[in-house]
Amino acid sequence: MRNGLDTLFVRYMLSDDDKVRTMLSQATGYAATAMGHIAAAGGKPVLVKEIAEAAGIPPAYLAKIVQALARKGLVITQRGVGGGVSLIRPAPDITLFEICEALDDPAVEQRCMLGVSECSDERACPCHDFWTSQRAAQHAFLRHTTVADIAAFETRRHWKREVTDRDKPAPRST
Image (cartoon, rainbow, N blue to C red; front, side, top):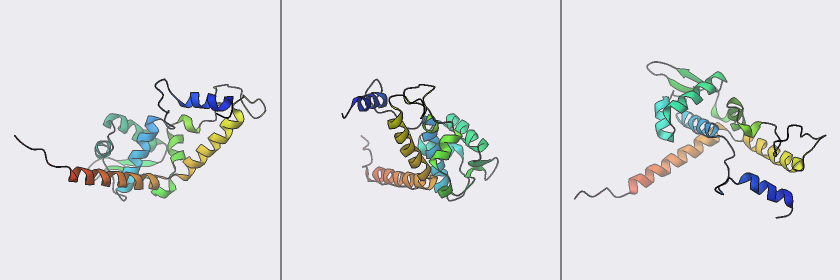
């Protein structure tokens, strides 16, 4: 470690069981995955049940996330035959940052790494310079990553899973 701030940051990033904390909330991760599945459908509405099954997300929880995304204007929902969830804009025009904002993800909040309420450029905590640059890089990444990127990833992941499942030998009956 270069200095005490590096040690502090590593402690912050590690949870009690020494696994790195996720950068985004579970709800945001589920929303991004779901929107990737919707984008991969090529504009056709997709049922929440189908998205939940394909992505391994609890359906009731996903329904609440979809409602929040609809209220924030990222998706549109349609009831009835031929209904489902669709993106309101093209996938390349919706960023991960927007999804984070819609779900009030802590990753987009302007807050002190140490939780000091009065931390600012004028009244900086010991981690301020480090955290400000890290947060700027994180926000740049979130603003650059789009639902189209997530859809491409989900499509590759789904395709690999299908190939792997197809190559597995059939169970033997005895």
